[in-house]
Amino acid sequence: MIVRQTPNALKIFFTLRGSIIPKIYPQILLIALLSTLITIVQHWIPNSFPYYGTATFTLLGVALSLFLGFRNNASYQRWWEARMLWGQLVYDSRSLTRQVLSFIDEKDEPRQQVQQNIIYLNIAFAHAVRHRLRGTEPWQDIERFVDPIHHDRMRQAKNVPDYIMRLMGKQLGDIRRQGLVSEQVIQNMDERLTSMTIVLAACERILNTPLPFAYMLLVHRTTYLYCIMLPFGLVASLGWATPLICAVIAYTFFGLDALSEELEEPFGLAANQLPLTALSRTIEINLREALGETNIPPDITPIDGYLP
Image 1 (cartoon, rainbow, N blue to C red):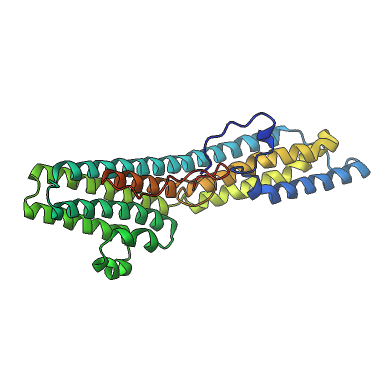
Image 2: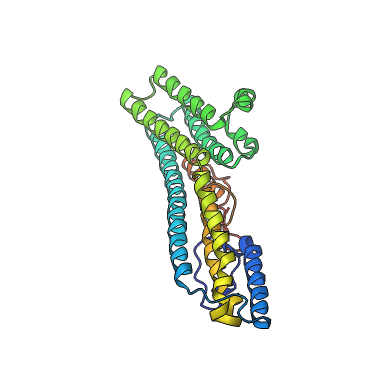
């Protein structure tokens, strides 16, 4: 994710990190070259492309803008919902940790171990959710927080975060049977686990339910057709300015199309996708600090304005 920047008026024209230009420059070059070729033909052979007027292209441009606007709104809604879900996960993790440390008496070592087990499983859950959403191997981040007796079964689990959540549920069951806290406190803790489970399920819904392919295909085709047809209709009135104007319009439409694709999948590693690594590291730092540990990892800081 690109962190908030305030570039000056000159720098903003040359900023590439976080820009969509690296993804769409082939399309822009294609339209610019096509427009240049059509302009040359029109210059050497006048009236090769008669003047059609701009009304038709204006109407097509408005219609395409509506399509792209709707798709961008839908993509941004998915991105923002994903960010809200991860904010909920941070809230639930801190709340569960506070309840565990506040209501489980830590006078003896076994109860301190119970506190650590639940909090460590909470950390492992956050890392496991990130790796599941990104399709990466989670073992290096989570096995150090899970008891080794569970490693084999955890590696065989098809849904690792859900397996860790079941381990947390069993820990609460053991706490209840041992009478370490009251029934009301157990219920409150279980509500936190339920909320974390909802976060996992909602993130999986976003991941596994993209925008309808037919709609995406319609927007792609319409964008290409419009930008390819545009120089034929403008060359008679704009002349040598046609390549520049068409390139700017292509940048606008192809850029909106590509940006909506990037926001549609909010859990990846692209520049404008969510910083899940930083968020899961924040949860780990907060929870280990609450346990009183001092050997905790540092915050993840942006590198060249990019936060992973």
